Image 1 (cartoon, rainbow, N blue to C red):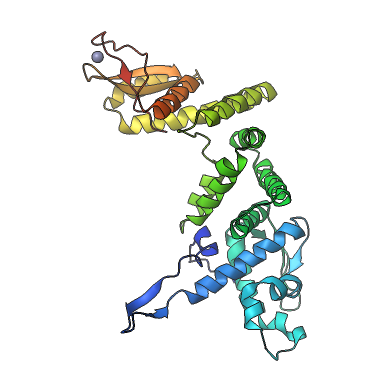
Image 2 (image 1 turned 90 degrees about the vertical axis):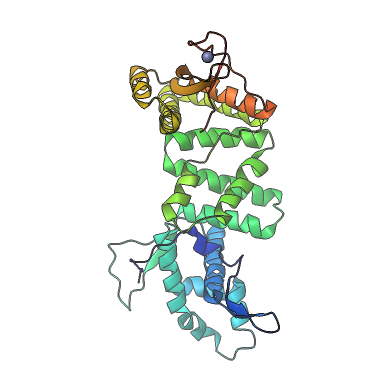
Length: 343
Ligand SMILES: [Zn+2]
């Protein structure tokens, strides 16, 4: 059932938002034909399937016809519209729409939003059983917040905990950091703007590359270059991670070190010097090797700096719109190195 040769991303969940048109407009100026009408309908049905996960949870299995009977035919606008004034009796409706529902469930399975046991025999008589993944429920919650426009208190709490459940399941140092970071954002009343709406935006812009979106979500960017308040939240989260588990703190720091150094290697002028300097700093996890340009003699030189100091300088320079550097140039002993920070 799964279309193995076809690759698609999380864009299939949201493509109803911007309909595309095929061909030139006719004489009256109307588009001739809406090309992606089925895509739009499918997105609406898949969204509705994910909404079901909010109350249903991620523990119990369900069959496609149960999903149709208990939820889709009652709540999904597309099916409510389809059967408005229809004479088809209620009992046969789940079977009538089952081919479509099963096809869309297999797409959700490809995106890791629903799960079915791959070892269970599937025959016509024993239909496949599915359950929602934590990712599926989290995406359902994000879409539901987007649809509601206003997020009330209880919806906010359910979403907060659904997002946490997903990141708890990842068990990476980045996800452990995020859980602390989320807690501080909530305390500072920044969670809605900085986390929730940002994740919704990432989802709305999801490309047709599944892994790209998943990486954006799993390694959610925690550097808010234009906000000192968010930088303080970052620092507080960092110190809590360090107190909770020093090894996690070191691995989290090491990931940052690798990411920053690889960006600097990509753009640096003296690549052989850069790799040697980086190699010599190999074991100092908190020290990052970066290339900077002197603001007086314009030479490119490598510097080594505490990673968090480097990022703090970056945020401060971004906010104050002026570069702040106190690394003196070794060539002219007059200028300061501008590290043109990119992360
Ligand atoms: Zn200089």
